[in-house]
Image 1 (cartoon, rainbow, N blue to C red):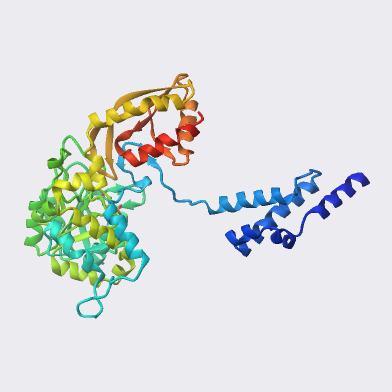
Image 2: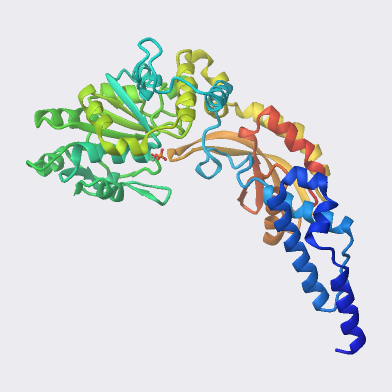
Amino acid sequence: MSDSVTTSIVRRYRDLSSIDALLQQMSSELERWGHTQLTDTLREITSELRAEISLGHKPDTSIETIRLRAEQKLAARHEASLVNVINLTGTVLHTNLGRANLPAEALDAISAVARSASNLEFDLTSGKRGDRESHVEALICEMTGAEAATAVNNNAAAVLLVLNTLAMNREVPVSRGELVEIGGSFRIPEVMSRSGCTLVEIGATNRTHLKDYRNAINPHTALLMKVHTSNYRVEGFTASVSEPELAALASEHRLPFVIDLGSGNLVDFTTLGLPHEPTAAEALASGADLVTFSGDKLLGGPQAGLVAGRADLVEAIKKNPLKRALRLDKMTLAALAEVLKLYRDPQQLTRRLPTLRLLTRKQSEIREQAESMLPALQGALTPRFTVSVADCHSQIGSGSLPVETIASAALKITPVSAQDSELRELAEHLRRLPLPVIGRMHKNAVWLDLRCLEPEQQQAFSAQLGSLQV
Ligand SMILES: *Cc1c(COP(=O)(O)O)cnc(C)c1O
């Protein structure tokens, strides 16, 4: 480096203001972000500027530019990681997109109980310690006909807790046709082994008979369990043992009979025009001593796992020290109670409970919605893409009713070039919108199934179309 270059670099270094000098000129930023963050950010910017200078560049070191760089860095650091999206995948209960949307009643209850002290475990009548379960137990019993109930963090936890309480160091026969894997990390055999019980596989993948259960029962058997094959269906030459038959066998041997329902809804879906899915009440009426099911699948509530059934078994489960580790927090309890209360008015459910409202939207209504949105979407896209309204099939999701689909309608966006890269580019632009839009790529098009697009989000969707530059 020549002397003159070295001199000018030294001069530029010297021109850089000190952190203290910068802080003195940034009182409003100091007020907004606080001393620690602002100082750290200014140090970072200063060292970046030094690095640029050392490379012989001439960066703008004015206070205005530093102020702008600091604002950008701090704002980026504060951007939320967990943000809302618009779910146009056509899967109503999408595990990766947070499953059930909660009704207003539940949101209000969460906010109230989070804001201040509550009677979470305090009996207002006696002034003594109360039971946090009391806020939901009677409601679960009311909706299922169970004698007793409890709730934990999710259904995986419910299954773990039931098995750990009733079957540790003992055997549980389960049909090979029911060794379910739910979305990667939850596999019945693995949960059983973690719970401390031994799985005894019986029958074959497609056929299991009552005699298979009967032959597996021995003095080490803890209980009989049936797992609802919620995310797949074995078809063809099949046989499985009905709930009443298994219940009778269990009772003959004085063993509890447990059903993991998975979704476990609380109303007869056929009355809503949806495919039949066993309800918790039906499972108990068919002879189950305990049922376990999710709070945020078809029930439409917060993430939770519900256990309902015989009082003595529920009592033992509540006393298990693991229960404390898996118990629900006050916000979830508050939301769950509100959602359960909505079930007292079944006629209003499809209006008031978002999950059931979305699942029961009519195709004709969705098609009309798509037609009304088509011109604006086509107008927002470059002529590289064409938009049409197309019929499609929504899925319930979360492993509920895997085979049945619901007729729906979509805005179908097709690249004129029929190129896959353009399709991916479009999907990426949709994901990068201020309120990200998640569609489905299928048959060389991006499908925006509008089943889950309710009025509020439709407004947001339309309002941001201007920033869709693709
Ligand atoms: C979904 C499901 C689970 C797990 O429930 P989470 O609430 O997601 O933990 C367990 N068993 C079955 C049969 C399921 O369908």
